[in-house]
Amino acid sequence: MADFLIHCLLIILMPPLLFGVINRTKATFAGRTGAPLLQPYFDLYRLLRKGSVFSRTTTWVFRVGPLVTLAATLTAALLIPLGNHLPPLSFNGDMILFIYLLALGRFFTTAAALDTGSSFEGMGAAREVTFSCLAEPVICIVLLVLSRLSGSLSLSGMLINSSAGLWMTSGAALVMLVSGLFFVLLSENCRIPFDDPNTHLELTMIHEVMVLDHSGPAFGLILYGASLKLFIMGALFLHVLLPLRLANPFLDWLVFLMSMILLAVVIGVVESGMARYRLIRVPQMLLAACVLSAFAMLLVVR
Image 1 (spheres, rainbow, N blue to C red):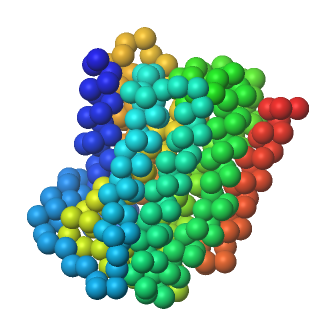
Image 2 (spheres, rainbow, N blue to C red; image 1 turned 60 degrees about the vertical axis):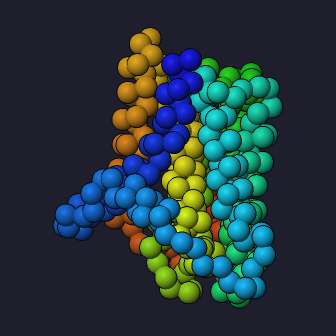
């Protein structure tokens, strides 16, 4: 029962903190004081108190898009184990549901963008689904490799049962998986060098352009859903990179929290030290991630 409550509290309260850590890290590298770590929480509170403006050209798809996306992401968060603890929902084949829930969120985000009738948002939606065709196979292959190594078809089985010993027996494959998964982590969460969540330049916008017409609570739901997706992908990445298992359950929760914060710092460092890729380079890097994960699968099944 305690694990269930802690899991739910973490997926509700912690995701915006990751954005705060990333922004504070970038500000430190730029020599600025930066916004407070809790600024994302204040922003969400401010947006939820505002009203919403809807275009007369939009339909119900535009209004329910943020709600369905957030609901799908929250359900996916209930499937992913945090640290060495079972998730609230777990069953054989839940990895397929996990992939489909993330795809469902993407579908409604792009559908809401297309529903505005704006060619500008349509451009961003086209870019989003094009790049997802290269990002989603990486996640599928990563889960297949982990399923092969663990002998389980459940996310909890393949992630919790993974141990440091796998790095001794399948180290080369795991290095490729971690590299490809990190590329996808940055790409799926609209981070530099694949995308810039703060840009408003037409030629470089991908995800940000799809949510320009959202305002008030709807935009707040989108921002919270984005932080929750970063939290989920980060948890999956850490399970593969650092399969640490501690006997003390509370100490294990602490290690997980510190690992997530450290991952946010690493993302901030990457964004501070790199420029955004040219748009034509994005599919090339995602294709490289696909190749790395495919080679990892070949090493495991050979």
